[in-house]
Image (cartoon, rainbow, N blue to C red):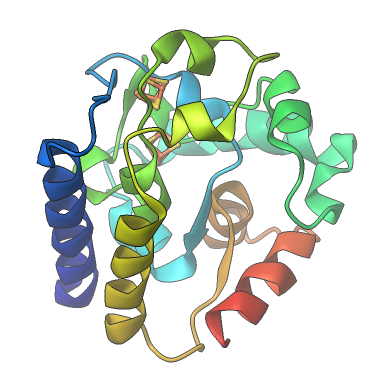
Length: 193
Ligand code: SF4
Ligand code: SF4
């Protein structure tokens, strides 16, 4: 396991715990074990964090899930869109390939984006027609999230990272399939700002 990634994960977890405990945040997360509606959102990650999260034991199961993800998302055309609309993506019911029986199979090593994603209202998360970014991110202030991003950029490798849909990165790593993705360009442009 990468020490570098572990530092990022621990940094985010500490920032999120402080944000949740902050008395100025009067709403609190509804997130709990076994709640997983958020795992059909588009999820973006870096190549390093995806590879680092995988273990040999669950490789075959991830490959089975991944083939379903590719068969669902690729024909939709949403991989060719930079920042696909979350509601359109959720309508595909393209669950994250790392989800196993309603739980994240890589929870301790999950990508930073999943660590940020909390909600004050599980009912909003469950309803594919009501997605509302303010509700989803209700307990985190923009300032706290910005501080977390600054911390991440301090330890990331200055723009050489490869970021994309988690499924696209898995497809390359596990199946050696190159999927066209507009998000790779968008995310890597952001990382060098
Ligand atoms: S973000 Fe929403 S769906 Fe995900 S764990 Fe929290 S309440 Fe549940
Ligand atoms: S990596 Fe885990 S937490 Fe993130 S979307 Fe996939 S299953 Fe959900």
